[in-house]
Image (cartoon, rainbow, N blue to C red):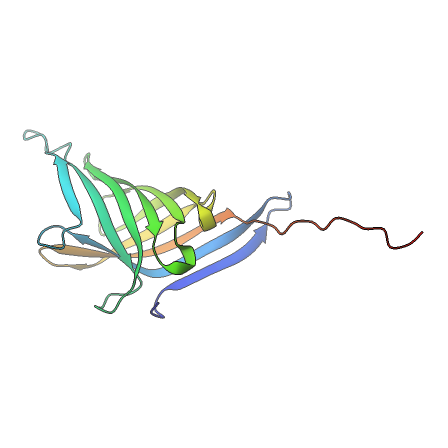
Length: 171
């Protein structure tokens, strides 16, 4: 994986016996391709012609560890987005990078402008019971493609090692 992505876990405890780890992922890039042979979203419901509302598309957005052609695929953003005054997004971030292969984050949020926040509302695998926020900022737009920089901050469940069984050492 290129060195531009920043994946960090920090163990935390809230004094209640509940143990979590802090997730901090930076410099991830979501590529939204509207047209051409590499398109990664498709309209499934057309907008209401009178109001413009209701357009719905399914997406399989690529999320990479950099901007250049040598960037490695980290995850896919698989789900849907609907226009309801702003674009409403809900999708699963399915990790492909070996370190987190098969783990997911569940994402929901609105996209009213070039800089937004989406909620992390769950996860599986290494990100079990995740919750947090994704800061999303548009960083490049061409006619057929929009690239957003993602920064993820949150918490997820941390598996603790099993407590050893006590053994008697003497009389």
